[in-house]
Length: 212
Ligand SMILES: [Fe+2]
Image 1: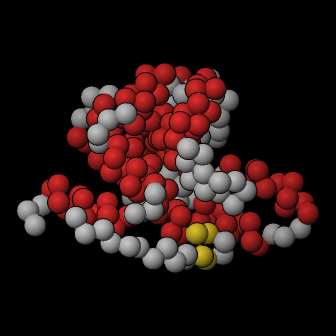
Image 2 (image 1 turned 90 degrees about the horizontal axis):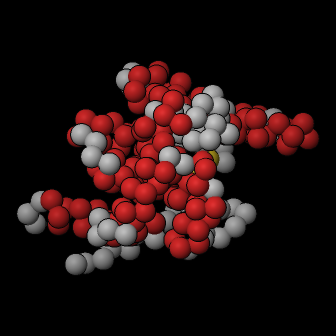
């Protein structure tokens, strides 16, 4: 297979890195669909979670507008409050574009923790929509294995160890399905995404699905 090299030019608008956002959304979406399939969910659910997981952080676009309008010291103190608003903004943006309520619920609750310590509603257990519980696990993993401005990416093994330490945040049935997924052959395509080789992923997808 010809491996294409991808330019990783950054598209930075008001501090919002679209390349990073698209890459993160794609990884969370791919992982969420694999976990949903592993849990035996039907095609409609898998299609819905693919979209919700891709767009779960789109509210950060609106968040960055807030962050860049206010530059006072008070803004530093209030920053966490604004960051936590992104789940609400994501839901609002998707609602404005006509997405169905079940997708809105998956996005709105993607930072709820299974033990009720998350946000924005502090709901727990089965009260959290299943799609949100799946996105939560995949989102945390995707974030841990990616570089951030304040730290380098953790290895996959360390990321899993960190998640096990915080397992009270996750639906154990979802977390076990996630562990099964990342030890499966299907995970290789997602792993290529994580290492930034999106072009190779696209070529692989077409080779798997279309006669070339
Ligand atoms: Fe988020």
